[in-house]
Amino acid sequence: PAPRPNVLLWIRAKTLRLHDSPALHHALSLHPSHLHIVFCFDPFYTTHVRVGTTRWQFLLSAARDFDSALRKLGNRLIVPRGKPGKVLPVLWDRWGVTHLVYERDEEPYPKQRDGEVEEMAREKGIVCARVVGHTIWDPREVAKVNGGRPPLTYAAFLSLVEKKLPRPGPPIPPPVGPLPPHGGLAVLECEPCDVWPEGKIIFKHWRGPDGSCSVPTLTELGLPEAPPPLHRGGETEALRRLSAYLSSTTLVAAFEKPKTSPTQFSPSASTTVLSPYLKFGCLSARLFRDRLLATYAKHTGRHTHPPVSLLGQLYWREFFYAVAAHTPNFDRMEGNPLCLQVPWRLRDRTDADVDALRDFEAWRTARTGYPWIDAIMTQLRTEGWIHHLARHAVACFLTRGHLYISWERGAEVFEQLLIDHDWSLNTANWLWLSASAFYTQYVRVYSPVAFPKKYDPSGEYVRKYVPVLRDVPAEWIYEPWKAPLSVQKRARCVVGVDYPERICEMEEARKRNIERMRVAYKEGVRGSVDLQRSQTTSSI
Ligand code: FAD
Image (tube, rainbow, N blue to C red; front, side, top):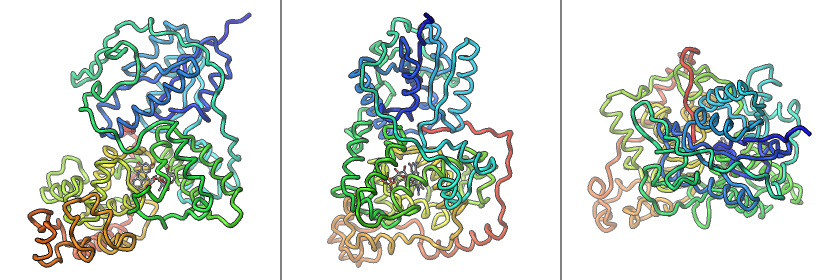
């Protein structure tokens, strides 16, 4: 009889789960003699992508959780340190691999990397399968049924979903029986790791410090040990969280965004906080959708609908993925045909505009003098997740609202600090908030005072995240500069001494920027595509 396939399942940071994994399912459907489940710890991400400690912690715990689930099934996650293009060919040669299976990724860097790896594999006669598993619909299919272009409005996307795209199949259950064995680590002796062009050695050798090819620690990544994070990664936690949220059918049926509170933190946030789990593939979007539809079916009364419902949120994700995959230079202003060209401050990373740099630094480090903005940026810096409307508030403040600084600089800070940072979704939402694409109501600016008051008049959220303001009376919690000096002294929070002065006067800044945006809109210039400047960015 013909020998059974020998399969390498190439796992990436978007496939960390057993349930509804089309890649794992495909690998098992080949009835392999061996199944090598490999997650290359690509030094690209430690050098070329901004990743803060909380996101590393989330990823490492997600990978550990996946590894432990695989071990219960008699296999494991093999985590060589090194570029996939270097490590995988060694592994498939030595293990005698016949099939390579992995999940499709439309972001610029993975697309290029996967193309190169696949070419090498095919040259060796290895059968390659690329499957779609990160989104409910394949972004390429979405564009295909729309005449080869992505839909540019949510309404157009919804209409495609309803009329032209196939109904998503049911989620695939996780495997139950023992998995085929992997090929062992003996094939991976002590190959030294790649030296990065800057002469930097990221990892010493492929097998990691203890030789076991297990998930790295923060220390190995050169980061100091950090306190346990608020949000723990992994499929186990994702499924627990999903079930807990969906257990309240009334809450799910009534879910309506933006009508959720950005200041709610106890006992939990007002939305699901499932974004980091979707981002790392600890939770399948298709399973989420399926369980959500089942919850609606159980509910006897009416429920909300897209775009405002919880299902509608998942569809925003699908919509933005489709647009991002088909827009050149999506993550920049220049050369991006969707993006309004606005003469922002700091539009170039090397810009030396001292005032703009000072304002940007104050925003980034939560020292704007506006308690609402500083509280959000502190939550982001310490916990890595903030509510959607909190993201709106700080993104609007940085760009068209008050500081008139390029959305690209803001997106970079989010790239560093968000645990759910996602190349497509982060970019799309910054384009939106800066009124550079998708959204045109630039006159609607979030006030850093009136807006939070609607949700949290006594300022509990601000008191939690900016403790120096803890004793400021509610009347002045969002504008402490207006409190009489005696009140500031009593609250041990004198503006300019204990808490920063405001970096700008909000009304003045708002009016000036609306006028600037009016001019940009009148000129109406969008980016022209320069295909020479290829995108190489990505997220982890
Ligand atoms: P829920 O309201 O519970 O929604 C469920 C899921 O739907 C989310 O987990 C998410 O996957 C998806 N979703 C919800 N809102 C959006 C949206 N506006 N766009 C796309 N998908 C959405 N989301 C990210 O996942 N990664 C990012 O890097 C990111 N950057 C953002 C940057 C800015 C400036 C803004 C305004 C929004 C950004 N978002 C991003 C979108 C949104 O804020 C988060 O997805 C959401 O707040 C996550 O919380 P949740 O899981 O509780 O959402």
